[in-house]
Image (cartoon, rainbow, N blue to C red; front, side):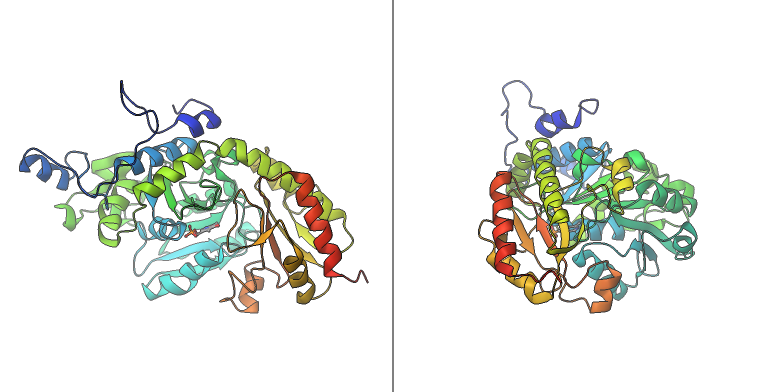
Length: 431
Ligand SMILES: *Cc1c(COP(=O)(O)O)cnc(C)c1O
């Protein structure tokens, strides 16, 4: 399946039914699994055999869907989590504990910014945020001897900035640490960060992967490429015996599967943020059409971005598919078939004009969501990012007047008509 094109993997990856088995991934709605003798069960607990025993650790529905996402990304293993937040927390916490430090792009999702900047420090993990457009020297200056990983988003939410994955992978590797990339907005249909040197990929599957606003979920994918043992002093959790598993050392016992095995056996066991099998089933339904939907999201967004770009009432727009955009060259490199359906822009005038515009939309709805079949808008400064100060907002690349428009799958003529009438109704002075 790995050799197939991404579109084929979207449809058929992961679940490979044997003769007479269900064609569609079945929902294993069971917390537990039965064994014939206690020795078999004991071997599972020792990680000597692989098999299912309790859904907090693993479930066949989840595994099939995680396998599909691993194949789509070109990775060796993946794990579904209850949310994108859980995925990003696990991605970092699996290799970084109290006393550790991470380097992250400052242009990231507000929830992740808060996780890294406020919550991780309470666990003794510090984060240095860097401007991803800074020079190599400036970024390298953020590293410390206790730095454990580098983090960024392929296309940032909500700013729409494109992350230079290859450059950051080189910088991370020159410091002996992996690069973690949140690939939520691009999806593996439009960008596969492992091909550019990223080591670990995360997703909020709540977004395009689900695509219909039905289930919150996340995913953690490992490329299997990072050589943990070559940097054993930095990653004792992977490279020294785990006393909670009879002194087993993940990196030597599981090789390329070490990272995901540890995340499952240790973090999922203790922190319990598993995706429900029912949600994994819904996610799989979304994945089956992801490659077709992404194309339409990108086409519709390109048309709307061009329209907004040329409208005199629009103050500014950030959409990497526009040739005069700052990120156009990076988008040409990393996202040659399109990025995503999310557009960031600001209207001329004050906050009031932005609010009037959004309140005048009829087809397009105001929701705390993005990357959905249904076109929606959000004003991050007053919604998702309201916990950030103006200075933090600016640091995260979010202007107070930024409107995030998530372009869905509706007919483009109807979307353009709705935007046109709302711009008229907003009564924007073009001074
Ligand atoms: C939404 C989002 C998250 C958080 O995911 P949840 O599923 O809402 O927990 C993380 N990263 C990015 C880029 C997102 O868009």
